[in-house]
Image (tube, rainbow, N blue to C red; front, side, top):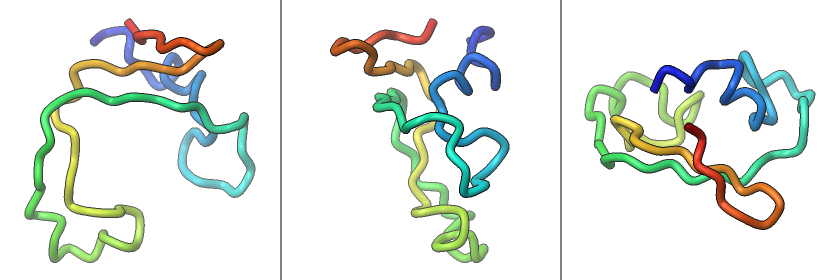
Length: 76
C-alpha cells in the first residue's frame, strides 16, 4: 500500500525510530491482517529475546485497522 508510510503509520505509534524510553503518545490498539509465517531463519540468529519476541511474523500484511473513538478504522 503506497499510503502505508512511516509518517502515516507513525501517527498511531507510541514510538518511532526505535524504543527510546520516551513515548510520543499513548499506545494505540491496532489489528494487523495477513498470513502467519514462521521465519525459521530467526530461530538461531540470536534476535529472539533481544529485539524480537518470536520467530512468527505476519507476512505480507494485507490490512491494518486502528481503534479510534470506539470504532475500528482501516488505514488505507
